[in-house]
Length: 458
Image: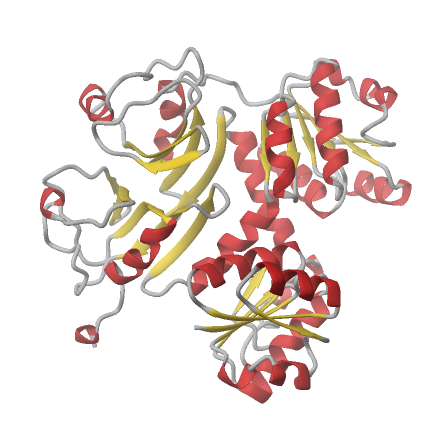
């Protein structure tokens, strides 16, 4: 597939890296010659220096042959104009734009991004996507990652196996026998830097990160089975009152009104604006790296410190400082992948990777077949995929024990008529079932084939 990416920053680079690895013909446009030089030297892509919304630049990048344009520059207006030009002059079928300003996304303007107005097929708001992920992490303490699928009926949990994990050294097939009514399946294990799709005879070890697909209502019980009984935070401090911090604070006030919330914001005008818009949350003006400010926020009594500023170093250091001053848990927003291991090594309990969130949303629309949702894990080593089974799918109608699934793929759960089904040997997938599965990177192409729309379907 021919894809044009406007923007060679961290998000654009990540998308280009993933799509080029899968054999797509990728062209990247950016006004920065150094960014274009870096991306063409390290990835198998074509690079063009210029303005992503200019017709002549899009023409040089091959827009007349492109099947998709992904506009992820730092500026909403450039992203929107690039999509308009790609549609009007080059008839590019699919246009995806990153839109950061919430003013464009307000419900009363829902018709703005339509074929008759601004022809953008998919809008991605990193602030909202990241904010939702932060809220999910807050709601399920003990999970290092959680993503919802199938209209919120199914969840994927990443759970660390600690010293007191009750299921360590137990074969996975025995777990199914011991807890037959628990709608949860261990689908993959991350151990010593390697990610492997789980097999029924595998067992977990201390230090493993288990990827579990379960019924949404069974998530807390699943965490308890792994020894994670952490309670939801009653006192939360947020560092950073920008778009993400404000979104999270507003949502906490609405969904968890009993939670005591404080926000630290370094910009005085922004601090005043956020204070005026919150109901009960207390806003402190100052730096999250200032120990005096943290003490004014009663950091020693806080259950959770969430650092959501625009600076990775500030987020990491302030979360670590909060832990040292007595805060029970720390969560940091970290853009650069090179800081992820550092954050873990200094005791930060969880981190949010906004680039991974955006890339996953893009992949959902790149995948062929009836793919409804995609979430990339471990820097793209695998994907959790939700797909709809069609009548022509080779998965339909056969018991699981007779399916010849490709290596690197494990089905975690099925949603049928709003009922979650845990797969067993005699389980059969039916047409229109929503299937949530875990696939290693080299097995993704097989997933596309299993859920493709066959010519026989028409």
